[in-house]
Image (cartoon, rainbow over all chains, first blue to last red):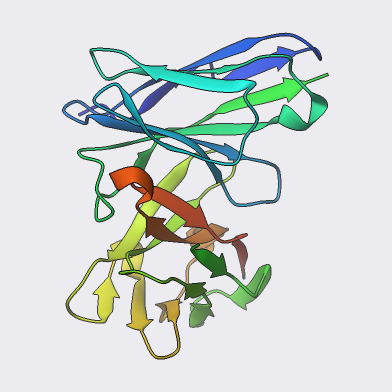
Length: 114
Length: 115
């Protein structure tokens, strides 16, 4: 079975631009979460979506937004990119949205903002 | 709010030696704990998890962890490491904002296995 897939794998943008990252969850999983991992740090929670509704939001500015589609795939959008947005963006899926649920991570999208 | 502390940023160890990676957490609610491993330029892979029941949890690749509620710890151990275990290890605690499940990660421990 395919795991969590993310696209693109790598991306280079310049300051002020906009970026869209995509994630397809494991088949049958209804929850998708996004995390930002800056070099040398642990992942930081950005958003969680379950059944197309936002279930949680981390401490990120409004430049960050996301949505989940009827097929449970998800997009993360970041506007007005800053140099500090350079990071590995990880998508994770889980069957449901409860605290006991295991989150399975994709390989990530590495974003470099110049 | 939940938090996770991984005191050791780097742990060097010789091959076939035992290793312990330390993790302490703080939580005001029921605790669900996870260890993930990240190999270079890859995403996170689940090693093991504690949800309830036995405090000794066995995971993949010969790793195990023990949940200690009184010491608020969830240390990861392996009796004999291999070169292929060289990676970054993250401890995480699960929170439930708005009924969801958010993982709060520690800063990671880089395990370097040497010959």
